[in-house]
Length: 129
Image 1 (tube, rainbow, N blue to C red):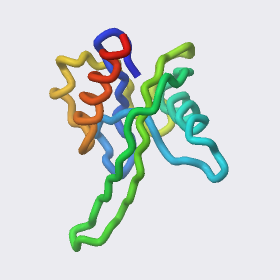
Image 2 (spheres, rainbow, N blue to C red):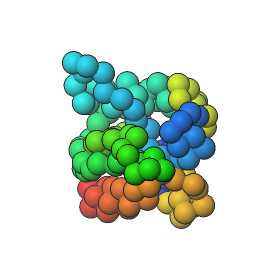
Image 3 (tube, rainbow, N blue to C red):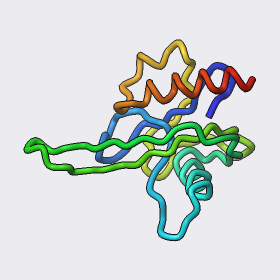
C-alpha cells in the first residue's frame, strides 16, 4: 500500500519473525475469498480500511528448522492497495505500523523477500501513476 513515496509496513509482534518488518498480511480462513482476507488482515493489523487496486505477485516461502525440515510453508499473494479510511494503529499481531519512505526501506529489518517484492510493486505502481 502506497502513500506518496512511502509504503505501509508492520513490525511482527509474534513468532515466527517477531521484530521483523513486513507487508501487512496473514492467514486465509477456510472459505474466505483472497481479496476479503487481504482487507480483513490489513484492517486487523493496521486499523486501515483498504481498496484493492491489483494483484501483482505470487511466491512461496519455506522456512526450515535447524535440521532442514520445513517448519513453515507460506504461499504469499501480494496486492497493490489504497487506504480509504480507518485510523492507523498497530493491532492484532503487529507491534508497530509505519508509512516508510522508499529511501529508508533498507534501514528496517525486513522479512526475506520483502524488499524485492516492494521494489517490484514500486515499478508497477510507478507505471500506473
